[in-house]
Image (tube, rainbow, N blue to C red; front, side, top):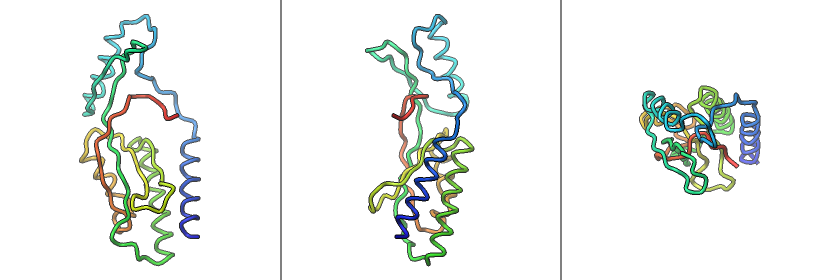
Length: 167
């Protein structure tokens, strides 16, 4: 019952955060632009590199568009060694955990977070949009659930096309 409530609360948070009206971002995929495509791609890549991000690009053979790939960091939130908290403690930690994830999203450090729908060892994921693994690791370790040992993190570099939405 507690897990269902926690899952429902977390799902509600994910829905609320994902439904917030987001400012329109410039998508760095160029389609039939009359401007100099090469200079636009170069400008976007230079801006990302100046901020410390790793990037690469490729030309989509089908559309002939240049696509910028950016390195993100995928964090797997796994069951930690300390899961014997009382219900009140676990509920408090869950509230703090959701606040932490919401803050990471609002500050632009986390692009998406969510729990898995089973009761396995891997409880959920967060994708961090940071320039370095060290920064993503530091932010993930600020999570109150991680600090309490209820969750532990496993972090991996992950590449995705810049500006492409989930479908």
